[in-house]
Image (tube, rainbow, N blue to C red):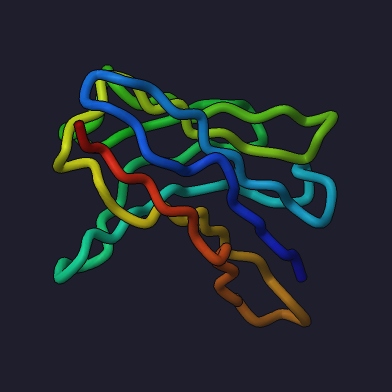
Length: 120
């Protein structure tokens, strides 16, 4: 099993940046991937992008491509979501997620989320 803990959210002005962290309770090499989602008030949870911990490859949805970047720091067992050129519509709770086999059964693991508010 793994625990994921997000941090780094806050209030930022439009055009600003935040780096969100997702700290894992075990070696990040033992986690196949980290995916970032967000959920805005009254909306469904939205997939943002994912990174493979095996080779570092990442992919993003079109709405954040070129503005958001996912990376990992293997020494810190932490994944990051760098968010740039933030817009008011980026306001949401941001979550990291992974899936692992536990005793042969696939299980989902979510962090508790971190609030990002983009406002002047």
